[in-house]
Length: 146
Image 1 (cartoon, rainbow, N blue to C red):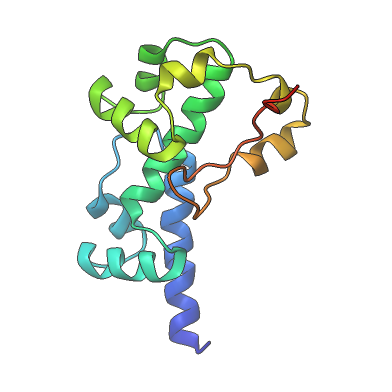
Image 2 (cartoon, rainbow, N blue to C red; image 1 turned 90 degrees about the vertical axis):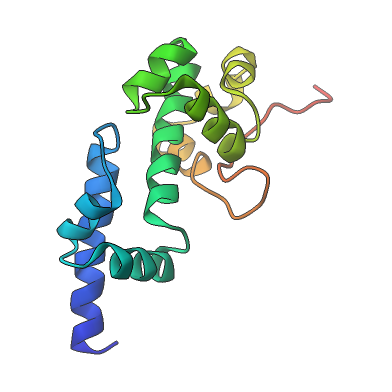
């Protein structure tokens, strides 16, 4: 990696850190791109090349991961939607279903004993995105035979 690529990657990390920290804020690609000191189009291309998904997909995954934690804690679907920065319950539910593989209501009502029994650090690792479809978030599910 040459000096230019290293500098560009440093700028991309700043934008990714912004998403990780301020996921509940109204973020758009131009705002994220300005953090990376790039034009929006160039930023989107370079972010996808570096992290394997678009900036918006990364943002939505962070939002859904946080919403999953809130739903496991008993928060309503509407409150989780608003808490993670989504303004449309329909868009939130659609994104949640696409990323998590089930609706927010189905997720909220199912048993979460397996993930709740894990230490927080392991629970976060198991709720990270996965390239396996239909769900981008892996989570320990209770054994169906138990």
